[in-house]
Image (cartoon, rainbow, N blue to C red; front, side):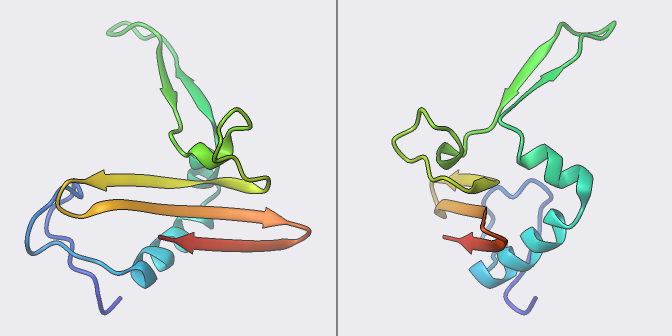
Length: 107
């Protein structure tokens, strides 16, 4: 990944922290090949069970192309990752599959 320099684990802005769409695609492809990770980011909502330290909690995927109720819905979108920082702007990694064809799009 020649266009990649992660200098913090959070992904929040640092001048020395950068990547490219190509490198993001390589990372996403590797992540998608992991069954547990694939299940996590293709799930619309998830309930974290109650523990002795916390009540039940809910997580929702914010990828608007996954939900039929969204004006951005696109049939075949499996999931992905949305992101935003004021310095970097918006990013979107999306997996799509239809009729046996799978695409990975990074914007």
